[in-house]
Image (cartoon, rainbow, N blue to C red):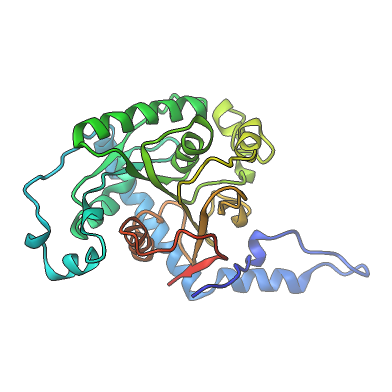
Amino acid sequence: MTTSASVPAWHGASSVVANGVSGVAGAARTLRSLCTPATLTGGLTELAWVSAHALLWPLGTRAETPVVDERIRPEWQPPAVRAFFAADPLAARVPVVLVHGMVDNRSIFTVMSRSLRRRGFTSVSTWNYSPLVQDVRVAADQLARHLEQICEQTGHERVHVVGHSLGGIVARYLVQCAGTERVASLTTLGSPHGGTLWAHAVPTPLIRQLRSGSDLLAELGRPAPGVDIPVTAVYSDLDQMVLPIAHGRCDHPDLRARNVLVHGVGHMSLPIHRAVVDEVAATLAGHRSTDRSADVVAA
């Protein structure tokens, strides 16, 4: 289903005061929007996953060694997997690299990496970059070197990249500004393509780059006529870290960007939500159009 995204009242502008009367009706609408079943379920899921992720985080500090199981052949896969890749069986073998967000590590992809493997992708790996990095450009350069290594190890010329939060901005900078021939597609999850208001709360060099109007975002806003890599930006109306939510969209006129809106999914829950994982898998398998479109609303 294709539709235009609607921004909930609690992510929009402040209530307007007219004729001396405060926006009581607007406050009531905001309260109702916060009390919907989808919002409450999403909030509880976010809380539970953040707690679980805190326990998994120490296990994700060690770098992962990419492993490709060359014994896996398409004809050995279950019928559902064979049907999933029926149009393009080779799509299952294109390496997938998952890139985490700020002050995080590969443990955020514990669910997604296993889910993608169960769906038939034979080469899924995660990449940890240093939490001490203070410049998206530096992280993008490190990612470029990592992708070169993946290509050497797997024998593939290009890989799919999926980035959560800041990881999506790092990968987009590599694709759009630094330049690379190693990325087949880019999918971002809850990445602040237009910046976020939270970036004004902490004045570190890296976080300042995520402010709307920063030098980095201005660089990403420049023309990019030579970039022909499909971009899918998944964003949520319950994302607590990307404010306003419309800034989770990738709207660059020169990019083949497709925006997917999911309802009631918190920022940290995006990599584990079933609808998001399904959307990522379908995108990587080539089941989604790469043409620009209005927002697609995922179930």
